[in-house]
Image (cartoon, rainbow, N blue to C red; front, side, top):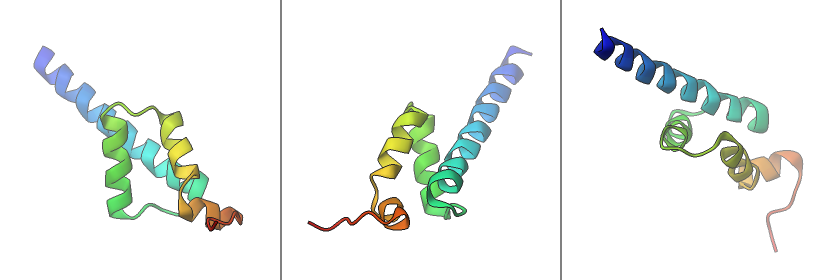
Length: 74
């Protein structure tokens, strides 16, 4: 019984991080995630990265800055 509970908790956590990673794309990039990006951010969150840190890093990226009109050139 306990083993089933542990597996269910792990599965639920993976599902939650998939949703969280998808929300990063929806909220910050205004698009659905591509497979490689979704996998990257899901893995970062599964490995302990705080959601707020993921947002900070995504907002510093070229795609986000281009979308909102901030120049990335020097």
